[in-house]
Amino acid sequence: MKKNIAVVTGGYSGEAVISLKSADVVMKHLDAEKYNCYKIILTKEKWVLEKEGKEIAVDKNDFSVTVAGKKVKFDCVFMALHGTPGEDGKLQGYFDMLEIPYTSCGVVQSALTFNKGLTVAVLSKYGVNTSQSMVIHKKDKISVDEILTKVSLPCFVKPNEGGSSLGASKVKHKEELIPAIEKALKVGEEAIVEEFIEGIELTCGVIRYKGKVKALAISEVVCSKEVFDFDAKYIDKSTEEITPARISIATEAECKNLSEYIYNILGCRGMIRIDYILKKNKLYVLEVNSIPGLTERSFVPQQAEYAGISKKELFGNAIEEVFAGN
Image (cartoon, rainbow, N blue to C red; front, side):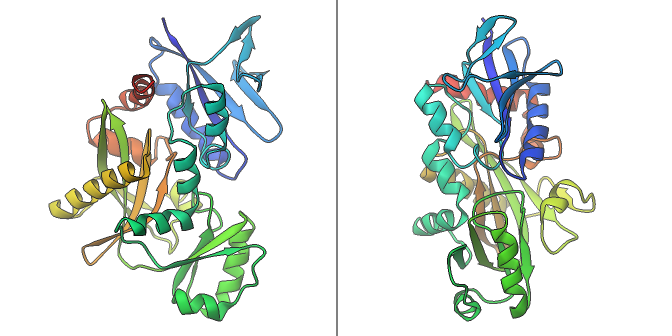
């Protein structure tokens, strides 16, 4: 009997447009012979099933929909929602209460990795190299001199919670710092100021595949802009995404081992992606993405394909791992 799968997408942040693209790719490649797939779009105004150009309201009491007079309940939720409320643990808590399994990390891991400052603080306790950083809240009185005693110029400023590099800036001069922080605080309640580490930007996807944690291929990012921001990720075609990365065999092995180590120590589930800077053969973790992009252009599908895993198998495996663990 086919399983009912809710592919949850949309969201309440600027990343909604990418979430919708990720969901379309997931819907396209999930095996229709094994799963009945339903695209569920969440916005602040409404939660709806999108079906044949029509919208059907979701019953939030049990996360069900009524189609042609028949109530449909879901066996599993495929999380394709980047940003809040999908990547910060809020939806995971809701689904936990309803006892509906899902393909992403749990509440704690999602909330932790969504907060960049907390993520690097925790990882540093486990011996993982991270950049120097400082978190600033909207209510804080900003002291440029205090910030620069901890984080030197140049530095990066971005929202402490969020993704797709929305609201991110590179700061080279002291007078640019306050405007950059204000820009980041328009996106979220907190901004994080991070030291600039000059090196090669790498990213590595990690999944649980056939019962085992598996690091995928490593990608190298060569960006024509100084900040690998939203435009550079999704619009600017001059950005190069090279899979596999042009790194030594030893560095590749170290990066994969470190990625699997981070997946395990944080207690992650499903698919994640970890971003790094490689400087003088030393890996520094930038952030952990608990629901990475799944568009045709996104890193994790690229990396899986290089590892010999098709999108159909990648997405199907995510669901089967959920059933195997329940």
